[in-house]
Each structure stands twice: as C-alpha cells, then as structure tokens.
Length: 415
Image (cartoon, rainbow, N blue to C red; front, side):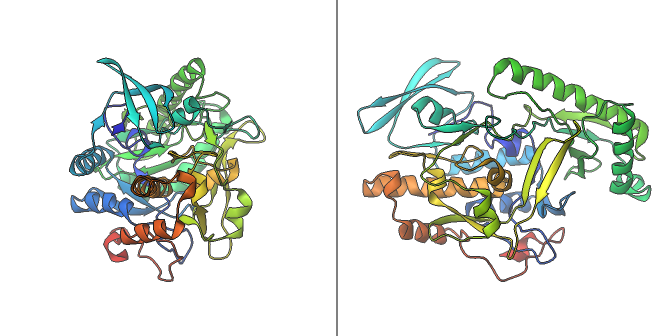
C-alpha cells in the first residue's frame, strides 16, 4: 500500500520541480551514475517527447527536464501496473506497535480514521513523519547548522525565448537581477536565480524564490512561508515583465503545489553520511547507490542575502552511499528514504537530488521484500544479496568509465 496526502504521487518531482538532477556527474566528462527503476520513469517521459537534457544554471551537472503534468500520469501508470494499493488524500496521523510483528499506522482521509497493520514500512514522507511518530531518533534542521531555505517555484507562459537569448540571455538576467536586488526596486530575495525553458513551448520554470528563518514543522511558520513565497513570486513577475527582454507579455501560470522544503527532520540511521564521506569519494562495500552531485547549500548569505554555496566532489567526483543511511537506528521493520534519510547537513545538501532519492526508494523496496522473504530484520540485511537484486534491475554500483551523452536528446544513448 502507498499512502499519499495529495491527489497525485511523486512528491517533489510533481509538486514543485520539473528537473531530475543527480543522474549525471558535473564537469567536462560526465558519467551517468544512476539507473534501474529511475530510468524507467525517464524512459516513459522520453517515449512521449516530455523530456530533454539541459545543463544546470550554476554547474550541478546535466538535468533531465520533464513535463511535471505528464509525470503525474507516469507515476499513476507505474503504480497501477505494479498492483499497488494506492490511497490518495490520506494522511498518517499516528503510529502504534502491534506486538513485535507489525506497526499500526493510523490514517485519516475523507472517510474518517482507519488503521493499517504493516509488516514493513518505508518512510518517504520527506519530514520523517513515520519515524517521528514511531519514536526513532532524528536531528531537526536548524538546531545545529542553519537549515536550507524554502522555495516556491513558479512557471511563466508567453515568453519569447529567442528575444531573450539575443538580448544576452542568462548573463543579462543575472546582471539585472543583481542590480534589482541591490537597488531594492522589486524587493527580490536574492541576487541570482535559476530560470529555464520547459517542455511546453514558450514557458519557463524558476527556482528563484527564497524563504529563510521559518520552520516547516511549525504550521504557523509554514503558513507565513507559503504567503511570503507567493508574494516573492509575483514580485519576480513584475521584475521579469519590466526588466527582461522577451518577458514583456509573460505571466505566471502556476505556483508549486506547496512551498518547496529542502530539509526538516533527518533521521539517525545505522550509518550516517557525512561531508567527509562525500569529499573522500569513498565507494563503501555496503553502498546501495552512487552520487556525484556537488554540495549545494541554499541558505542566508553573510550580509543577509539568500545565496547558494557550492562545493564539488574531488577526484572521480563520485561517492557511494551505504545501506545503513536508510535504516533508522535500531529498526527491524522500517526504512527511511528521501530528504529525511540519515545524513549531516552538508552531506544532505549533496545527496538530496531526485535521482539519488529515487535510488534510495528502489533499494529500500528491494530490502523490504528480501527481509519478508527471509524473515530477517532490516539491520540484518545480506548486502551481497541486495546488490544482486539491485544489479538485476540495472542499478549502477560501480563508477562507470564511459562518458555519458548529455546532449539535449542524448538520453537514449546512455543505455
């Protein structure tokens, strides 16, 4: 059974963004470091012409740009084809134990309260809601180091991209955004931002809004963040229409389903990914996927400006993430995947890309199935067995030697 609080699956991939990062390492010799089930999602988008590859604005590597509305349908099809019982518009509200064999997950939806007796649970809530209610330990972002800022993404239509490019494109945009920030004319929250073309003709998507110093686990503060994010979005609309060539007739046609939250709770796992692990480029024996994404920390700058801090992975530019990072400490029947997995703030800022979080999901799903088949605990996993299962579905566990094709339509050439 899959529980989802919104009316569609996909989490951040369908609620806020339109680009998968983390499939490719950055640099002049990119490597494709993620495959398996994540590839089947991109393949489905490719089959209908709803994706293309594009460089990242600031150098995080090639992104897989996609149509998020089509992706909602792709997730539906994959879930239905797999025979999964899906409950949309359903929220987890409490967790209890039924002996040592099951977790009782208390749910609420329009039909009222109900409970599910689960032999295994994978927490992909982003906020570690299950782990919180089940009593597993975690760190709250902001308690030790500043939490990454939140972002309301928005999309604009009727953009003349040819005019924009001829006028100076991204360089011009960066110059004018910095000038607007410093002058205070448009009350922009930052000096720089990401604006890129979408699959839909004449449309662009942004990662420009920045909301800091508010906590997404507090309903009142999250409400303020939502309102602030929308206000900033329309400040940007005024800025684009008045200051950027090609945007004179552009309008916002969509805001993210909710404000994008980068980190809240990060669970303490049987292993914990640290910045030192990332920068060492280690490929541990119990790895379950690879990551080559740089540390990308969205936070408040020294002079009050919200900016992004980057640090790249040295040498091969790739590290492996151990199995224990998705097993809550002391867990026998639960896993945690997505942005609430076990990592320090800096490591999390590298390993939270969607290709990696999808890789966590496929590893946790296979691990859960193996533990049921073998009647073993989550922390008793035979890593060789899990590696075999991951390899069978095409996951990449060794740093590839082949240079990837990251041209606009090069996705199919990386098989």
